Structures are given as structure tokens and as C-alpha cells.
Picture 1 (cartoon, rainbow, N blue to C red):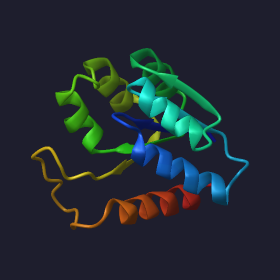
Picture 2 (tube, one colour):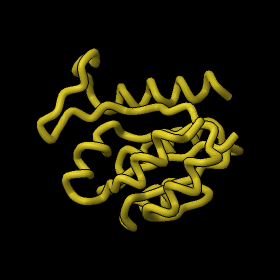
Picture 3 (spheres, rainbow, N blue to C red):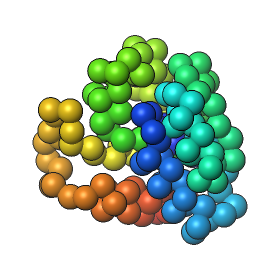
Length: 134
């Protein structure tokens, strides 16, 4: 099973997800795709097996991933910073992978239907969903 973590900015959410998955399932092969080199480096340091950065890395890895994990805020916050391009958004959207989106309510957006909770709670829920799919 190919699990791909996509994150931007400093890669904090991706790093946390990878650390927790590796603690529980050290045998999983995890792919870390950053929209910038800092995010990729952070996720690799957390234990990801493979890492790459940028548009092409997202396009190639989204195409054959089974699960894609990423903060929902990556689309909004990082688009404002120029990290998310139309090519990245299209690749994730077109992927047949099951997508686990972690809500991040900042940058003047609100995710309807999501209760206000700490990011750690959302990460725990994402990990539980991944584990249920293994």
C-alpha cells in the first residue's frame, strides 16, 4: 500500500503523521512530498522512506498512491503563498487514491461540518482511518 503525505510550509502536520505511523507500523513505506524543500526535509527527518519536492513529485506520486494524506489548509493557505499550483491541485483531485484531509482552520477559512478541535485530535483521527485501511 502506497501512503503519500503531502504538506507545505514547514511540514509540521506531515511530520507528525509520519512519526506516529512509523511508531505503530515501522514496516510501512511512507512517501513524503513537500511543496517546498523545508516541508520535505521535515517529513524525511520524521522517518519517511522516500521524499521529493514540487509539482512533478506530486503529479507522479498522486497517480499511483493508495492513500493521500494532507492538511486541507494546504489548498487554501499555501495557494496564497504560491506553493500550491493548479497542477498540484489537479493531480490530487484526479488521483484515485483515498484522500484523508486534515482540517486546518486558519487564513480566513472555515471548514463547514468540522468541529473546532486541536490539530492533534485531527491527526489522531487521520491515523485511526489509515490503520483501519491497512
